Image (cartoon, rainbow, N blue to C red; front, side, top):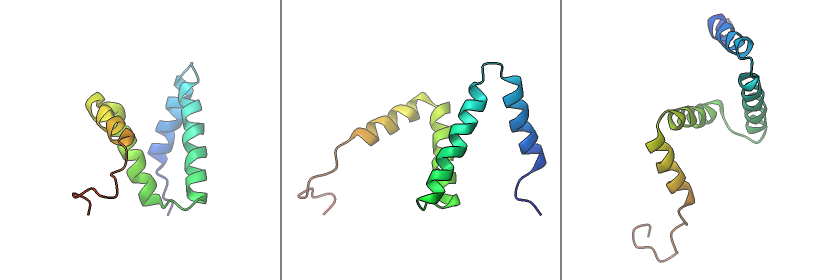
Length: 85
């Protein structure tokens, strides 16, 4: 039994074929390459699933995107931060 569902594969192929700009195929290649690299450096499939799902949700909600931008640009707490210690 394959982990790859034929319906999903066909959906991906159809999107790539119907996109005359080539953007879908470009993004597909990038996603495949970065997830291949991520697997090689030790990310698990579950971890990649969380990252990919988070990225998708961010793409759908500008408020969530801004939240993550703010979160990722915050400096780490100092060593005397009472909340952390």
